[in-house]
Image (cartoon, rainbow, N blue to C red; front, side, top):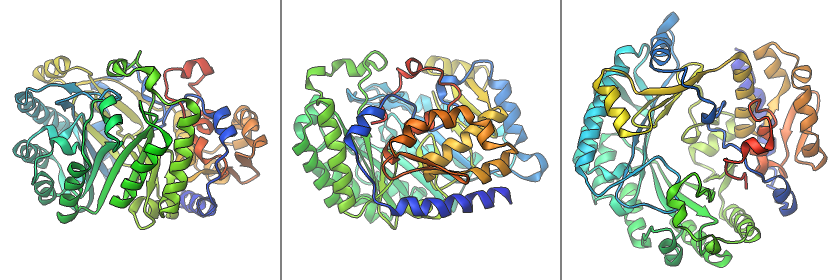
Length: 478
């Protein structure tokens, strides 16, 4: 009952915020656009500890059915292989031309699914399924069909579920998307980044507009209910005019959703980025102008700003969920399915079962070795404290709804909000002074002027960020 009341209060307030035009202030964006987490989880993955391992994970899988009730179930499968490296990429991937490696990987995915299933209590129906990577379509159609067979042995896909896959149209054979739709896939996310051939050459991703359109046409003909395109601004050799042409092409394609990511140049962390010449990157002021132009152009085209870097048509499920206060955020970004248990399969995959997060080992050698020994390949994670759960609720609410109901938090967590968060309220004062946040007796609300800086606002409630220096390995919020 408390959760329903909380959602209602959040929805009421967020509708007012969402209806107000987004205000873009370049000076404010530059001053507050420092590095910070993307908050697909809280605590963030860099806070996971190896003390949480296979035994802890097994315990929480077995607790799902306690009391005869369990949360809805979501499944993520990480398929790490790519046949070429994109220089900007920060994903967990394995670049190889050897297609036979996928067959071995599928055999071990089957072992992991069997081990997890042996301990997984509660409902096995999937409200969500997501194939990510890497490049899931590195696997040919027959292997993707085999993967569905593996998963269907342990989990149930239901007609009302959301089943999505990330694809690279360059490696997606004709007919693959049709076959996947027949198996149940209904959402597809297509990487584009930029349609400009010069930018594509600079990042080693040559992908013609015709190839992209062919994949989209097949997806639509096959009945996918959502087609999403991913773009990146701030790439080498991008300029303002060229990126506007990419936006115009994208709008002409009319995807249901658009993800507009900021390129984070961290060559000391991601080796492929060392092949990008820093002199080719747009200056910060030009990168900011690309973002400002993109927001204005997408808004003019009728897209709704969902939050962070996501836009959607007004009739898309994300936009509807936003208006109704049902929007959620997880490791795949914004979602319409709140409070799911997320089981993750595959190398490096991150899951969320009960009040825990867990992550699988990072290399294929470790992954295969653990499964050969009959051990689930979890190597680190975290069990959330009461304080973690409280702060996660606040950060989730800010990221999804742009506001926090003080009354709802106090009822749900039995605290005096302003006493518990006195230091945080004081730290929010610069945001209040600049008109980015409003605080009264009932709400902490991000204003239209502050919505692009919601990550920086959430950082105030992050107990683990002890200093600005500690956030240096994160990407900038703008």
